[in-house]
Amino acid sequence: MEESSKRSFKIILGMLIGSLIYCYFFYYTKPVHRTETYVENNEIVIVLDGEGHCYLGDDPDKGKWADTDDSYACRLPFVSGPVDLYLSNRYNYRAPKEEGLIFSYIESVKILGGDVYLAVDDEEKITYETKYKGEIDEKVILTSADPKIAEISEDGVIHSDAPGKTTVTATFGDMKDTINVTVTDLIVKMPPEFDTSKPFLSAELYSEEDNDLMDAILESRVEKAGYLTRAGAVAAARFLGLEFPYRINYFTENGRINSYRNVEADGEGRYYHKGLYLHPSRYVNIDPTRIVSGPKPWGYPMAELSYNRVAANGLDCSGSITWILVQAGFDPGDIGAGIMAGVKDMTDLGEMYWLADAIDNKTIKVGDLLSGGDGGAAGGGHIALLAAIDPDGYFYVAEELGYRTHWGFWLRKYDRNELLRYFYWQVDMDEFYGHKDGNLTDYWME
Image 1 (tube, one colour):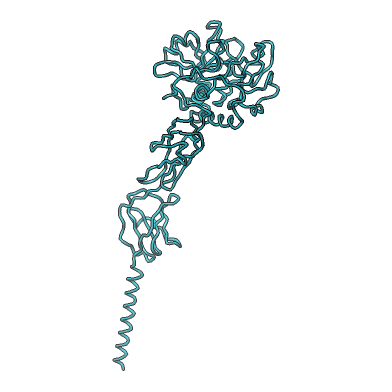
Image 2 (cartoon, rainbow, N blue to C red):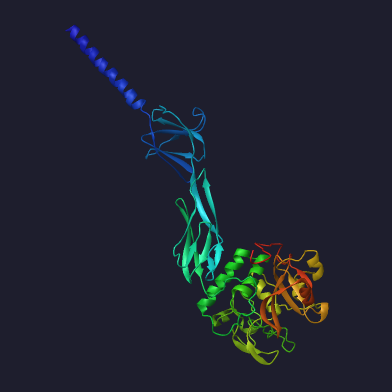
């Protein structure tokens, strides 16, 4: 009996020891394994196949380990790598380390410059910026929702094919950004020079919706050049002279500049508001006390009081420059052209220099004003804005002209000698623009 008890005891003891050994090896020394890894909210998430702990770094004995949560996931601060990964089970039994892991993730993709407006058969290159951490092999994929309206190449050039609206999307991993693309025949593809054959604007060509779209296009051009910058003003001048398909009539202001009227007029030779004046819906912008003969949008017949005649409403020379500056966010005030002591005019918006010296010394810049006209150098009865200087040295001047061979709003091309016959002064506008050039280009075809 004694012998039998001893044998039973040994068997039980052996079984107990065996169980303990089995538990030790099965439970305590059973390693955990990584089943999934991803990056979320700037953290590396390591999912294990059981409870445990994770460490990324060089010295696991001194570093801080992360515990798994209820879903067996460890969350650690992001590091791009290469870095070593250590895992241990709930009993701190470590698995073999994984060396040289590299982590990466895509944060975002952003198309720069906002929505795109194009004439038919035109092109515009878009750019985008990406944000990511670590090493990313994926490329940005550009797609058009309707290639029949506008298609886009791999290098980001949108080509317009037919009037309509579509979207362009940039896809970077799981991240996307989308812009609207509008193709319209309300504007023309920007030509290399002003089209002297373009017709004059006449009445009732545009609906309110057309005017709204044209205003959006103009605003986009200014924004991309730089609102409240020199380039923004230049962009407004180029839009009116080149992309707008009609010429604005020369119309002498019904107001301040007429000696027989001591009133200020708005919308009659001048238009002091953002956008184009193409539809009667824009009357809401005009102070009724400044209506003299109108109101009438550009191109609509109206009494031009200084000549006692009916003419299509438009702009005068200082009115066109005022309108250009207003589109870029500036307020030059209700002032005209001329050089007269004690009277504020457009030549007082900046420092005046002899134009010939400014050209020779290369101190003239696109966006400066030019003063000239009848009355010699002291007269300065005409004001204009330098809209471009091309690589061949020609000057393109945005000006509203009122003489028989040149009438209405132009971007008139001059060589140096011809320019100096018509203009005498440069008005340096650096101070006026706050020394902000924006995305300035000397010539629009660059």
